Length: 395
Image 1 (cartoon, rainbow, N blue to C red):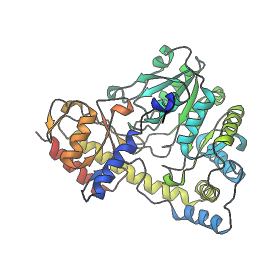
Image 2 (image 1 turned 90 degrees about the vertical axis):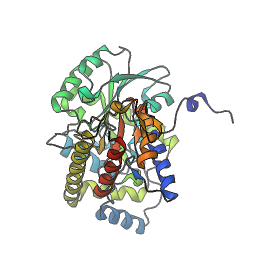
Image 3 (image 1 turned 120 degrees about the vertical axis):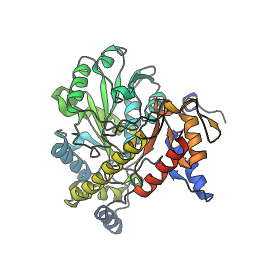
């Protein structure tokens, strides 16, 4: 079949590909520790499932407005309560996960040839979303020696005709989080440009070591007209399969995305939205989230310490999300499990072959010196996988 040029330019998700490969090996009876997971290993809290089940039993199974009023209000209230952001419910739009919202934003904002600034390392889907909208990714490199963070000067030195800037803190894949002061400096630079900021805040509650989470748009009232805030229930409430995300931004932008989605999808699942309302309004949420947060923080500390003890590996301890992004370039040139290691892909191949450990190579994230490991799996499996990796790398 003669496929379109736009889809020919887009590659498959590296994170999904490695998970698929690991699951295939596991189905064949091979004991693989899969560090590729991008979802919490916790179950969705029972009170959320109960709310959705109640709505389902009540017959809440029909078409409904794209974003039902109760959920839009719950999200607007959450933004005011937790993020210092004042949005009316009609400035909120519910989507099929945050990925859906970010993709739609690119379709609405970018014309053919428009430039999009993407800090690197980046979530693998950002460049592909830009390409599918006819845009051109422009990468702002940030290496481990800067804790994978861009500087205000990089924004000011970027092409003056760039239209959007992706910002993701806490970050996938690096696990880093910008401080309030760092974000304020970036905001000052943004306000000297015409950029619209797409602030991906999906890992909002997962910040560690006393790190403060700050919503970008809250830093200056002028940013409210220049920022679209994206979030989801996927990571925060362990609701990845529910496919519920949302965006909040200027009313004209939300109206434009709503018009696009009226031809693209109908409403997110009706009874699932009842679960989302419970997630944002039930007082039990705070205790549930705190327990998950504590466990992730301990796992991240354990993983970073273990990785930094391995020869040829350097890991910046994560301050957010549930990933470590160690620099493994110190192993390049070695032969591991019969594999000549020259880049992140061959390192990942050697880890899978020689240690039965599934990692995600850093190249698709924009940094070929690194690999990504998720600590969204039980501690026993984390220890087992790291033991195997240490054995593979020992001199």
